[in-house]
Length: 88
Image (cartoon, rainbow, N blue to C red; front, side, top):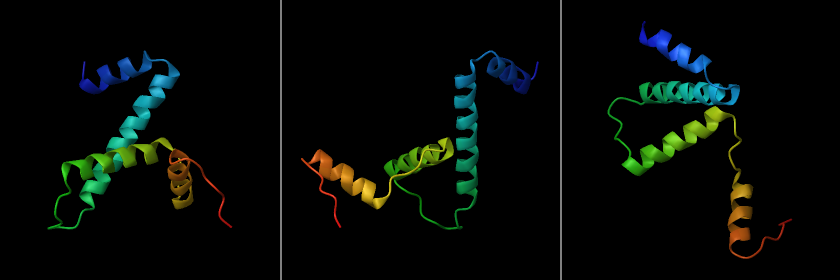
C-alpha cells in the first residue's frame, strides 16, 4: 500500500470535523510552499519568531478566519487596558 493510500484510508476513518482540519492543514502547507517559492532571490531570512508568526498567519488565513482590522486591534487593546470608547 502506498503512502497516499494509507493517508487516504486514515483520513476517511476520521469524523467530518477532523477531516476538515486535515484539509485545512494541507491547504496551509500548500500556501506556505507557494509563499516560500515566491521569495525573491537573495532575500534575507526572517528570524525564527518572524517565520513562526508568518506560519501562524498563513494558517489563520487558510482557515477562512477573518484577520483583525486596525480598528479591531485598537478596540481589543483598549478593552484590555480598562475600557474602549468609540471614536467618531
